[in-house]
Image (cartoon, rainbow, N blue to C red; front, side, top):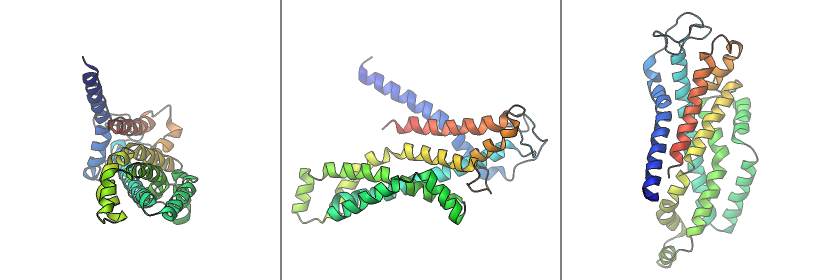
Length: 261
């Protein structure tokens, strides 16, 4: 088998593995609205036909709770990723094409923002204005934009001297037109390659916030379920195993798919 064929076969195996890991949590998240309020059974019942993932200490169905957690994880991960990509791409292009002053301002803002980790920013916002799905996603997305901004700026600067861009400038196109019409489509694949890192980081950050009780308490995130399982580590293994396993499947699946660019 030729090296190119081996690479293609390896890519297909990686893609299948990534999709296989990501599919169950994603289906669980999509099924969350269809599960209603969930059924109540015996307290700390192990997995069975009636309760495939067991029940918690209040008799709540773990499948229902895990589905709610999956929905929150995917919503926060997706929103945070979209926010980081949008802010970072716009500011990165502005830094590359709006002049020296704009470049200095954007880079200093990125340096200032990156000194505060997204998780810490989300914790501060939760303490100041309260927790919530949208607030958590906004904090995590805003805290991660410097990663995207620096990559977008570097990619745009690498294209700025290309002959076709110089020709467009000579024809009278403004810097904004060149950046939006010609440079943005060229750097999008590079920027979007960061989606997997951003998404996984946001999902892990949400689980951490949920674990310490700083996420939206109205919806039990996977971190909250694992924290709640603390007193039952020996007697009710399903309380911590399933949320932890789902968290690993999401981050691992996204990482494998993001590597195929």
